[in-house]
Image (tube, rainbow, N blue to C red):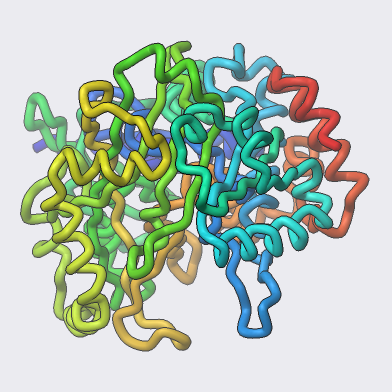
Amino acid sequence: MSNRQTETDVILIGAGIMSATLGTLLKELVPDWKITVFEKLSSPGEESSNEWNNAGTGHAALCELNYTSEKSDGSIDISKAINVNEQFQVSMQFWSYLAKSNLIRNPQDFIMPLSHMSLVMGEKDVAFLKKRFEAMSKNPLFQGMEFSDNPEKLKEWIPLIMQDRPSNEPIAATKNDSGTDVNFGALTRMLINHLKNKNVGVHYKHSVDDIKRASDGEWELKIRNVESGNVERHKAKFVFIGGGGGSLPLLQKTGIPEGKHIGGFPISGLFMVCNNPEVVAQHHAKVYGKAKVGAPPMSVPHLDTRFIDNKKSLLFGPFAGFSPKFLKTGSMFDLIGSVKPNNLFTMLAAGAKNLSLTKYLIQQVMLSKEKRMEELREFIPNAKSEDWDLLVAGQRVQVIKDTVSGGKGTLQFGTEVVTAADGSIAALLGASPGASTAVSVMLEVIEKCFPEHHKTWVPKIKEMIPSYGLQLVENPELVNQIHASTAKALGLSKELSSAK
């Protein structure tokens, strides 16, 4: 073991989209701070940020039906959709700033314009979609959204889905052309390369084995070189734990009270990927359906056009799977190892409450390829088994915690930041919409963890994100300006900048 101790201002654990975003923000705000990144794998963005491990939707809440719910009086609550869209607009502004400042080049390597659509079948769901469209299209954030229940119009929008479809069932869709496909793996690699050019030390194949608070209040990390086995000690004033599913065990090691009574439940995802270029060429959108009754929110079926390595792909899913690992490259003991005396009852309560989820996951794991094809055929009636292969996507660890509204052991579907009271350490937990809201979430970390600097940083933050501190939904003019400027800076299509 090396007795040498390295001092640094900021340590970022994990070289995924979250650490890459926080590091890039901090380098713009305080260029002279010393920042170091430690990543267990051999390259950046290989777990949840990897382009094959997530849906790349650029979650702007344009098509995801689980972000809008019908209230008891029949009206549609779009508040969650507004919140998610506002967060995505923040990401778009930051990426535009990076492109305009030449800090990243060729934005089309990570973001492409692509229509986002919602698709429903059956009289009840068609009525719901129409009401949802009426509520959303009045809002400046969702301008340009179109609705149709006319099969001829839908054939223009989604020819592959409408081909050979029985005509007796009511069907409807909404379409918004301001959607995007985002390759978060490519973006992560761009940001990490940018950080390296700014003298940020990025160390691959380095695993954080322990985190303890030193007597002077700083954090001391025990870091092992995965290849040589050498152990080094590094100290930092601020630590960000952005290790995806691996964040929870590290948070537990810190011993901070805020990290207690929190558990994690791993869920793996599977996608069907089309291997027939003729089929891929017939679909050009992200089309989201409605989750089946009893299915969790993250299992909303969708048929996605993706742009990966400058090639068009077509994916359908997700199908849920179960593995006790917290990362694709994790250990089979991750789940059991995360159970501690302080979260045991939280975990047990979650298990008792979520028996239906457990049953659903078991059913999903047991699905044969033909059963998965049956689900795909609800979207593509004439889909052929030989045109589709199964792809294992990323691991997601859903947060389990005690809440006032849900009681003990409530399963959370979303992204969560846990911060020490003194702001010296923060950890990111949870899943979707994750990457799409990375900039908003990292600004939240900056506000909570650096309150003494925040006031002096605000002008620079506003330069990077013009809407910072404002609610876009209350500023329609600003929405139009941002749509136009981000479309231009990121090289997105004209229809985005002139969204009706």
